[in-house]
Length: 185
Image (cartoon, rainbow, N blue to C red; front, side, top):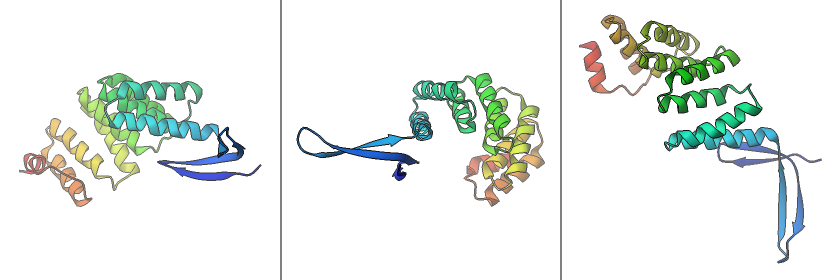
């Protein structure tokens, strides 16, 4: 059986093969056989697009269906965390990030997101631990420094907050001028 590769949006579809037939109008048609992995990839892409367009509930349904079939995809848990966080289901979102971290202890985005969710719940010391971990894994991520700066500010550690804002800016982060002034002046 021949394998075929098709580029489609964010996904690369690996097909095990295809068949052709002629429809009732005499037109040639192709039937593509998609692998299960590609179906999951397309579903994740669809869920992510729904999250980006503010349709978190619809995204949750798709992502929960994927989790019911496959509990080993860190990205699915991360997307669940984003959708649940947007719906203010912060404790559930924290659990989703924790699942992603269990699957990949070096998943810096999950630590960053979990830290932000903990910050929303005023768990600043715990949030700081997650952001420190995110920075240790990916020290070139300006978002982690910017968000850690916000937590340092909440903890009244102005020097550390200013240091992190400057580091985020140095790394090319988009730091609002008002936040910079508020933190460092």
